[in-house]
Length: 504
Image (cartoon, rainbow, N blue to C red; front, side, top):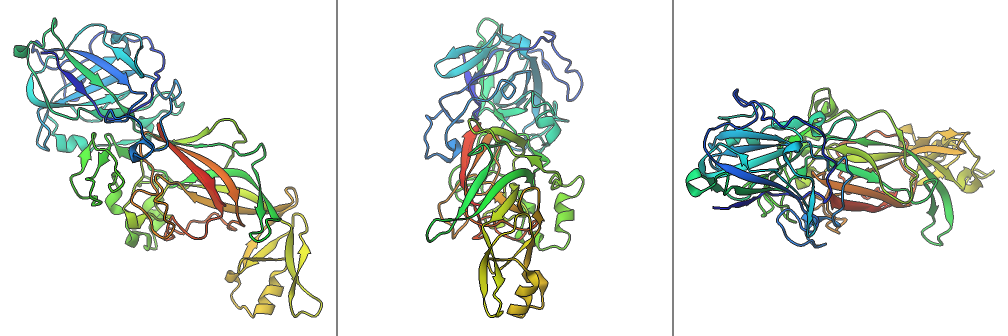
């Protein structure tokens, strides 16, 4: 019988050009090897369909579906490039099911792309001998890579718990991206059912990238913003966003998307490879359960979470120049999935961006001659200034004496720069996956990074002075009242997630 097996997930329409490769079958005589495993006379025609008008479940795109973000977008040729695909055949779908065989095919076994409706499709040149028979089978697909250490005989439980490091998800040149998925339902493959060379089964594969990406578009050619007085909308300062760095980046991920049940309980019926994100459920990463409020209170938190070989990459000390491109979003980085429970959406865990900026106030406050009150004075370009109680002062000693302060830590120091004419400050923004439109309560998966999503950042306005240092307090909730960036985030599969209206 002619069977069509559809894999979950969505990727974009276009794919890159085929490369030349050896058309011979690959060795599968040893555990973990790839190629035709069995001798059964079973055949399949493999179709790789790249959906352009539907999500992972084949549904039409809608703005209201969290899985769809803010719409879909076509990836670059490099992001969509097809090198090879590996299929893992399991004899069931419970945790004790075992892998019966592994089939790897180079892109040379496929015809050039064709367009069918809104989908770009690649089809094998001829039916492929699978060589495996079985009932109630499931197939897991990996494009541009394979599951390390997985071969014939591995249980489904061990297979799905395997993780992959950043260097295997995308290469340094960003020309090869790991993509995965699985069949949503079980199927049977049998030569007795006429899955022969003349009547091959039809196996359709749709995959999603394991990586996410973070993008940025400048609002003007200089990344300059005016800070306005709330009462009369007059300018009180100017801000230039000069540089950025990304923080709290993950080192690893599950090979296949893991999604909990839709009842708001992350422990309910987790599903690898086929789960769809709803408003009330979680996408789960390998360290999901370890990220707790209690953990952030540990005195060695940063050693535990950002040390060498740990769950996260180090918080970088290097800043990079921010893009001044105003027409298109530029990719800042590709990164791995990063999710937490609702109450653990804290600065110490969530992936964020820190902007290094120049802040130039119009005025600062100084004591009058009588010493009984502070009066506004024009800011001297490039000089230090000090913040106490959200007011900017010229002289720290005046503030200490006037308010009777014995603790200098209550006064924030902003170091001036004569070259820029202002002082350096930092704005921290924690990247949203979904917005529950409630500033008083954090929503499920509100601050997160999910695979195959493009998070597009647009800073729309800056409403105040940032912080004097880029040090992270891990215990601060991501949705904090101390936010001075108005950011719009667009999110697409690539889900694009726009963080546009950032107020710094």
